[in-house]
Length: 151
Image 1 (tube, one colour):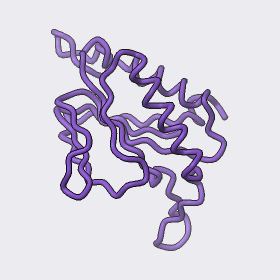
Image 2 (cartoon, helix red, strand yellow):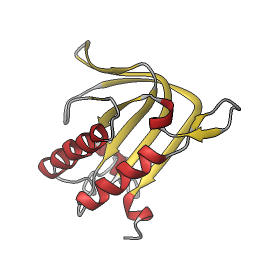
Image 3 (cartoon, one colour):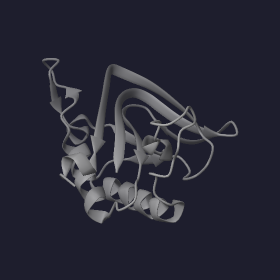
């Protein structure tokens, strides 16, 4: 499981010019899954995201988590995080999880984030979406469950 977490002032996702998810501040998460990802990967990444101290405190030091800061999360599925570009010029997406498995894991991911008391907005799994992110900092963190769990 890979997540690109961007601290943002605001973020939104639209489909055919219709707004389907929007936050005023917090984290925009681009979320992808690969073969073999499990509930363990999802739970680990959720705990890591909720505890990441990447928001500034009163002394302008990154000491606050999303919970401390009180921001929301915009979660957007993105199978292209597992693109393989080793050969040729056209990416291969064979490392991305099958849509059924990825959809279930994505739903679990968002459910677990919401269970932490965080407002979670989402895109639509598998849809062609336009994502607008006003990155603050910029602060962008990449989390990979296989690296973090030593798989």
